Length: 295
Image 1 (cartoon, one colour):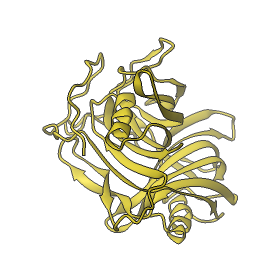
Image 2 (cartoon, rainbow, N blue to C red; image 1 turned 180 degrees about the vertical axis):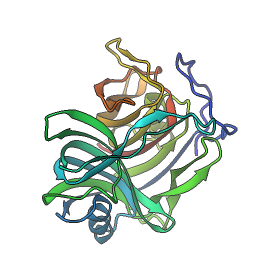
Image 3 (cartoon, rainbow, N blue to C red; image 1 turned 135 degrees about the vertical axis):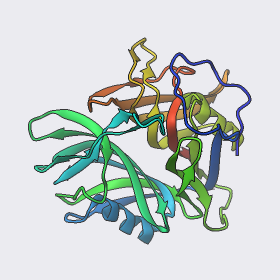
Image 4 (cartoon, helix red, strand yellow; image 1 turned 180 degrees about the horizontal axis):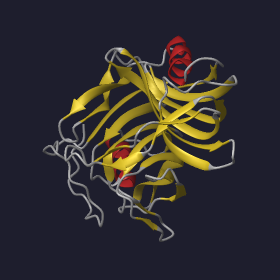
């Protein structure tokens, strides 16, 4: 577990209902596992992911999906909270009965109440060619055409839902499920980052904690407070959802540094993309991270 010593001062902040937990990052490591899975047509996306991952022995991890047709498609978008009980919330459910083509989706795989659970953010195109994004409802969205997806994870840990008093949400949290039986080879890390930590710097902290010099960001589901990109663009919406299109960590003369190229979804479902500015992008509710160590 990590408690960050010092955090940057942010231009955009959010107030949460509960007291801040002193432990801002939790991370667990296990022997690296990577598999290609088949998403079978006719299954809802939760089962289409959970069944092959269980067969592969992955207890917790992430899935990257590209060019997948789903019909029907059910989803939510980020929204401001008006009940005073959350810093942000979700829109009402939306349905695209004719389905969409998922351009890119990143999903965290774990457990909720002992059963398989998948949390997924995605960017898609509908039948009219409109490009949108949001939080997919995985038990209601159906795979329309069989396709393959990439998965990374570990056998000895999972992401398990727990109630979080700080944010008043039930959120994924890394949890051990078996003893580690690695041989000292490459590792995969599962981590959860709490609110108001700069996303890029928090990922660097995870790597320092586990003495990782180089890594690829494989899992990337969460939210930040608006966004500031390294090209100077600023997104002022307080409620967002994001996924990482590509991300890596490397060690150079300045130490461990991360770079994240993200897709951000605003409360209208619009998608904005780019590389995040380091030190300028605080996590909103949480960020679920899966890192794969590389040589």
